[in-house]
Amino acid sequence: MPPVRARPLSPHLEIYRWQISNTLSILHRITGVSLSIGFLALIYWLMAVAGDADSYAGAARLFANPLGIIGLVLLTFAFFYHLLNGVRHLVWDVGLGFERGERRASGWIAVIGAVALTIGVWALVWSFQRS
Amino acid sequence: MSLRSPLGRVIGLGSAKHGSGTWWAERVSSVALIPLTLWFVFSLLLLRSLDYSTVRAWLSVPVSGFLAAVTVGVMAYHSYLGTVAVVEDYVHAPALKLASLLLLRFVHVLAGGAGIFAILRIAFVA
Image 1 (cartoon, helix red, strand yellow):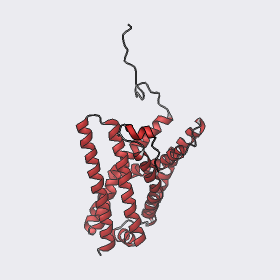
Image 2: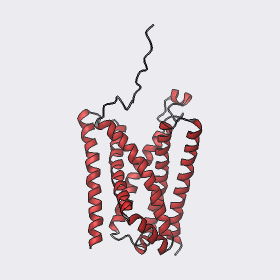
Image 3: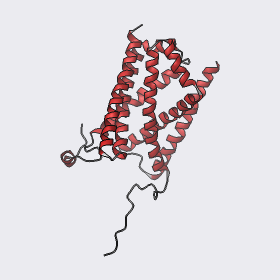
Image 4: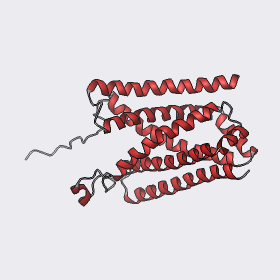
């Protein structure tokens, strides 16, 4: 009897060829977990709003420091990507958009759309800051 | 409405050891979050200024406070379902898995409850 060779199980990251479909699927999970952490930040902010002006100023300082801003920008991207890719999943769930070209196009729409919306939102915030 | 097959209902399938109930709950909460989160984000953006009195005045309007509380509740539920799915997929040691799932449940109930309580305080306590 030939020796039994350990066979790779799917999905096996070392042998799996990276392509847009699995990259976007993993990004959906990463952005989802990031948004769960962002949810806790939102609760902290709401509790600060419910407190007095000092508690709110403390929270506002935390979010406005450079690391806070970077975190908020990344969360904005995570939100729009998870939203757009989530809609993509819902469309698949009703049985549409499975063709190769459609899958690729909708994936790129989710990524490029999320980047564009993130830039748009922060451009608006920046313009409000200046006015 | 249930999408479970009779066989799946009898033996229980998947890493969660139950059928399509969670899958369906994920879809329902995600559909609800599309308008709710978009409303929340763009309402904040349209406030233009996020200073203390502006934010409080916004959440004191009954429709805003109500929708914000609902948004926080559905967010907590959807986030709970999502993080539980991640733990079920990647955490295999039984004790660590149980502890992680309990922690996720406690954190989400506490956070969701705290968020809704904070909004009620803003709306009802001057």
